[in-house]
Every structure is written in structure tokens, then in C-alpha cells.
Image (cartoon, rainbow, N blue to C red; front, side, top):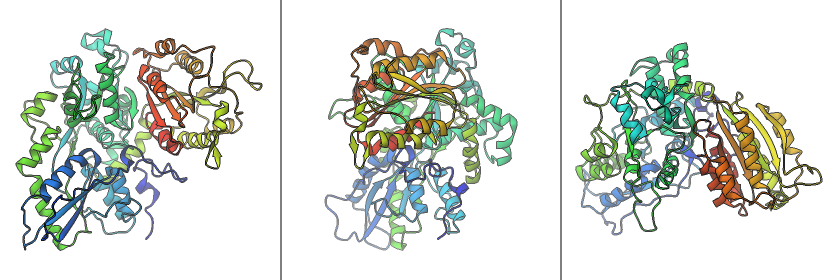
Length: 594
């Protein structure tokens, strides 16, 4: 079977970009453990086994509902009954393995697929057609639940925007420029920036990008590749992307960090809004994403809830389709029809509603609207899903329109980086991961490189050194400098983070995401600068000139807890690669932020 041409696969989460043996286990590519929903008391007459693969955000609920189905007294047309078994795989990964014949997952091949959005069924169809196969998903499919895309804002800001009446995507997400919140009478709130998932990794991020293009083209259906090439459309999308605070690989993790900051009284940092599924607004407001004690289902509700703002042009709906695959035989198709009927019954739909989903007919519960805020008087307007080929072209173009970055990378070269990891050293593993991560940056980004440890015979003047000056991205030169670095000394973590943060502030670019990236395998061992409290104060985010610190804790000797505190003080993020095998994943997740 011939492989799909490269262009047919470029849109998938970094699949084409990360080819040299890198398994992408991130965002829309995370493979999770199988969830088995077999019954505690299987019926002897249930000869039909139905394997269902669900997207991960609703998999736990599907396990519960499948068990409820299996324990019921339902019978199939023609006699007998079925046992449903649920496994979980993120929608992007499922798309990939379905296109490859469902190999390498360790999960049973499904007869029913429940992705987050029909966007994925369209992309699978594109992959099948490009490979000369009969499409596995040629049709449109019924929904088992729905969740529209919304612009979520902290309540004071969201209510102020709502008071202005109907506003469009450009009027909301394009607010900032230099005027920012001053245009709403609140200059003390500063610039307007928002959080958004990387569309190469996230269904929410992909849907947000599509919605922006629809708003730019001033239509709600039939988006074409010609629309994408229109200079006015390009200008509109570029204006929106310019206001991104930073990209995320996972909006759930972004909200968990926000909930933790809220409960600590730290607020939302420099972000005025986050574009995401309405369902997640409900979960956040109900404490479902707050820190919780062991045994608790939910944590405390946030002090400042989020409000869902609906742009007037319309929004994109994540429709959670019920897809019966060609792998289903005749009896499994009968079982699938019965399971679909079961999922759309009132009791099961009430279970979806408790998680913040709208029902299979897009109707919101009273409780959901009370939690996230009322929808417009005339109801929501939805954009029609674009042709899969248009989505592919859109993502090809997004890489040039997205907000660019101004990044200073600080690489630990202390003596502990000589410790073995298999047949390589920590430094060799880290260097290889850094090279792969750098390959995913945009050629228009600005990137610099520092090395750090403590003073050594080869670096007697200070604990860190500028290897490549922060400027136009020269990947070949950075890789060459990394390959030639000398590993020795102790870990001068605090001094380096402080100095690197100051360096980026001095070269701050308001048109870019400004960040420090720190890769270390240890903890601070530098007696001349051992004041963590002062460091946290020094890197605390200034919303007017945000410089964020992103840390990768490499190997088990890393002080991840401290790195996490440093990152959060700056509204950045720490990535846990204390298992060295996870460092490739950490770099891909890191790069998705830029």
C-alpha cells in the first residue's frame, strides 16, 4: 500500500516535521492506557463484542456509560445482546493509526470511533483518498454530544465585553494593539492578549483557527482556498494571532495552572481570554480543574469564574460524532445502532450535561448556561465544517501567520550532564532533543543560546556564557555550538535564569512571544546566588512586558518543584522530563508554546 503524499499529512500534529525516529506523544497525539468497560456480570447470551475508541476528554464518561449499557437488559434486533468495550486515544493519534491500519497501539481495533470533532473524520478521509484507499469515513455522522468554541474571560472582563453588545472575533481578539483595555475604559488592565492551543496539536486550537478564518472571510460556510489567499483575510488572521500570549499544547493544563493561580490570588497573568470548548469553562467554574485533595471528585470553585463570550459572526462546534467504521460486521453494526440509541437517551445525555456538554441536538442545559453565561438572544450561529483540503491549506499557512517568538535558550553544561543514560550521556540525549525541538521552530523566530554551569577553567569569568547572540534564527549555528560545548562545573541555576530573563527584557519585542527556555538536570548548586525568593520576585510577570520562563527538568536529579515555581512566577510552564526517555516529548510540547 503506497504511503500518503507528504502534503496530505502535513496538517497532522508535527507528523511530517518529526520524522527521525521521534514518537510524538503530545497534545492530540497522546496515547493513553486502555480503559476497559467490560461488565462485572456479563450475560451469557451477549455474543456480540463491540469495541469503541473514544477521544480522551470524554473517555472516562464513556467507560461509565458502556458499563451501564452492559449491565442493562437491552436486546438487539434479531436477538441476543452486545458487550461494549471502550478504549481511549486522542483524536489526532486515532486518525493517524486508522489511516495506517490500526497497528502499533496495543488497543483492540474499534468498530466505532468517537473523536472530538468531524474535522478528524474529514482528515482521515483525505489521508485515505491520498493513499488510494476506500475512505473509512465518507459520510456525515450523528453527534452524541456537542460543545461550541467560546472566548472565555475572567468574569469582570467578560462582563465588560458583553455590555458592549454583539462583538465579532476581530473586535474581541483583535482588541489589543497599543490601546488594549483602554478602549473599554480600563487602561489599568493593559494590553489584551489571549491563550490559544496550537492548532497542530489540539482540536480546540484547530477549531479556533478555522473560526478565525471564517470571521475574516465574512461567511459561515463554503470556505475556499481562494478565501485563504485573500490579503484582507491574511491581515485579519495575522492581527488575531499577534495578540496571542503564548500557545499551549493542552488547554486543560492551561486551565489547571489558571485555577491554581486563581486560588493563590495570582490572577490570570497577562492573558485576558482563552479560546476553548464551552465544556471546559463549565468544568473550570465548577472546580473540576482546581487542585483537589485525594479522594475528592472536584476541588474548590475558583474565586474569579470564567464567562463564555460568543462572537457575533458565529462559532465552530465540536460535534463528537458517532462513527461506525468499515471494520464492523453486520451484527456489530446492529449493536452500534443500539449503543447510539442508548447514548442519546435522556439518562445518558444528563451524564454528558453534568460534564458541561450540550446534548446531541446542541441544546444547552439550564445549569450549563447558569455556569458559563447566557448565550445570545437568538441562539448561537455555527460555522459549517470546511472541506478537509481547505483545513490542510489553512494549517500550512498558519505557520507563517502565527505570532513569532523571541527566545533565549539556557542549556545546562554542569558536570552531572556527563552521567550515562543508556549508551549516551545526559548531555548527548539533551543535545539531540534540543536539535529536534529547534527544527520545529519558525524560521522567522529570533533565538539565542547560552550555556551555564559554574565558573570553570574554560569559562572563568562567570557561570553562564552567550554562545549565540539572541537574533535571527540560525539553526545550523546553534546546533554546531551545542555540539562543541564543554561539560563541567556545578549548576548555577538561579544566577543564569535571572540574567537570561534580564537579557530578554532588554531585548524585548512587543510583537513577539518573549521567553527564556531553561534545560537542566539538577538543582541550584551555586553559593554566590542561592536566593530563590529574590529570583521569583525578579521573574514575576510584568503584564506590560511579559517575559515567560519555560523549564525542562531533565533526569531524576532535577529539582522539578523549584523549576515549576520559577516558571509559574513568570506565567510560563515547567515540563517534567525527569524520565530521560520523555525529553523528546517535552521539547515538542515546549515548542508548541511558540
